[in-house]
Image (cartoon, rainbow, N blue to C red; front, side):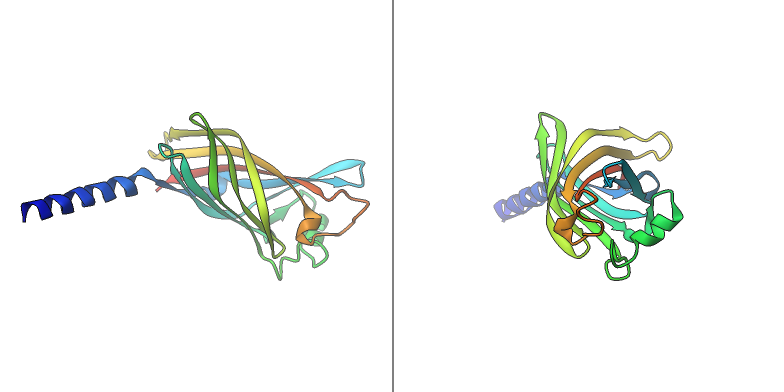
Length: 189
């Protein structure tokens, strides 16, 4: 009987350590703005951002594992140009009526030593899902002085061809290559 209780206690303690190792962080929408850069007929680069995001990040720094799940409200597109915002929402570009969100779901984190350097996952845009790697230029966690909780932030970027996602407006006059950049902050739950 004592051995049975000892085994049960050991398993419970081990399970507690396994669960406690991964931390969950909620995306802070007021500090998270996915943005993009795209060619404009080879004469300039148009930049825009999305002002509404949601999601969670799990991170086990000791095991160097985790996941990223970010949802972007495509209706929140902001070029800083109202007519372009309205045009980008139409069916020939993002078709936000049919595809109201874009998502990135990453489940493979790459570290170099203690530094998180990339997240590999799936990017869904315009109803199409393809692999995408986000390279991490900067990653840091701090005890936030106002929130009194740990907050992690990152500056991530990746490249994709919009034509791979069925966003073909303006081709071939406009390059299909798009740079995606995500500044993100997330609060430990």
